[in-house]
Length: 85
Image (cartoon, rainbow, N blue to C red; front, side, top):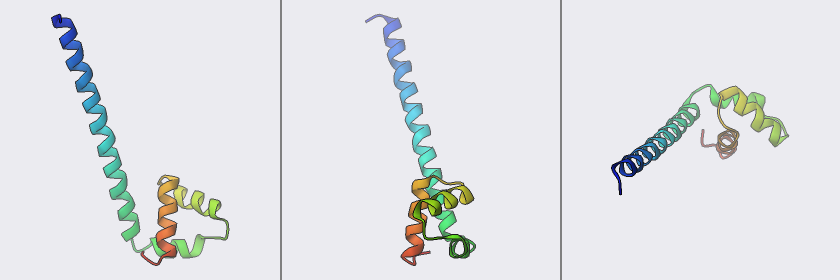
C-alpha cells in the first residue's frame, strides 16, 4: 500500500470516529435535557392545563412548547399519565 492510501484510510477512520462521537454527545445531551424537563416543577401543571383528548395534538403541542422531539414528547405524556412526573 502506498503512503497516500494509508493516509486516506487513517483520515477516513478519524472522520468516522468524530461523526460517531458527535452523534453520541448529541444523544446524551438530548436525554439530559429531557430528564431536566421531567424534573422541572412547571412541567406537570402545564401538562394538566394543556392536554386534550387528541393524542396527536398533545404530542405536537408538547414537542413545540418544550422544544423536544415528538418521540420524547410522547414519552413525557406517557410519564404524566403514569403519574411518574
